[in-house]
Image (cartoon, rainbow, N blue to C red; front, side, top):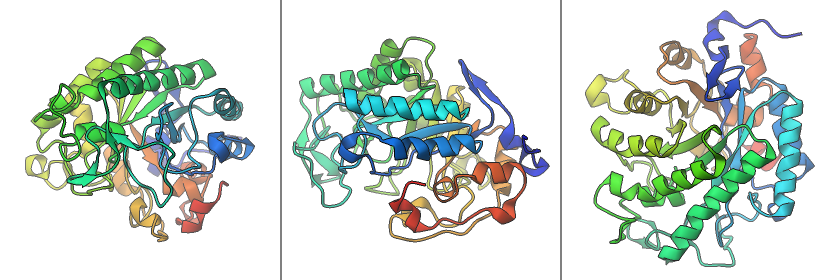
Length: 374
């Protein structure tokens, strides 16, 4: 029996339809690195992990970051591949399990660039636009023209594989200081060729070419999501766009290249992006992105929990918080979808509980959840 929708959160459970993507509600499972795919191959436990969320009302599931076919494209040994026969067979089992539960899903396609995630080191030198992991912080090698072209092709090949396997969407990870974002960021893109430049639109050329190649590979009707952020794991205060005008020059070319939905990552979704323009209750990142481009947007950042997800990696738990701010912004159609991370990590039935108004049953975030698939 389908649970009756609680009127207080009814706006979260409106259907969403765009370019052939049909979702039963507005809640997205945010991509969260699990690092539990042995040899880069998702197994039955990974499939069950995602299917469990699908069975409990998540509208759209985005997988953890899955890496393209490039040397040193991942920064942890358990990150799954999205290339090679064995890994793709594993993902075939995942999407079959999710669809069997009535869910919709897309892989997040990724290259971690020169970032670190602990002491583990890949076999090949890490690569980035300028051989930097952060401003004035060398790591690895600067990519050659051949490296760049091969990487663009690898993104396209992975996206085509997602479509061929029957996934409903594909998301490109262009946020948080990973490879695509390292091209965006002036602090890590010091190139003097046509892949660099003084302006954000010049430094966006790599991302634009990735999107064009992906669009050509998947055709006109397969939805492409692009995840973006201002902040970087290397610098939480970094900004790529300091005004709406600069943000427009950044985002519009990406949409024109073929992006359908922008996934706009903030550390706290309720914070205004440009309070100097529209005040302390102004539009957040996803709100401005929607206003400037006209395409649907996903917001994300500390939904339903105290603290923020960055603290989780330091072992901090979080308490349940009200959803009033989220409901208010979604009722105003500031953005179209909301991604939920830690809450769904600890409680696979979170969406179902919110739907029926059982807020007293919601669980806080337990950092122990990072060490298990459940």
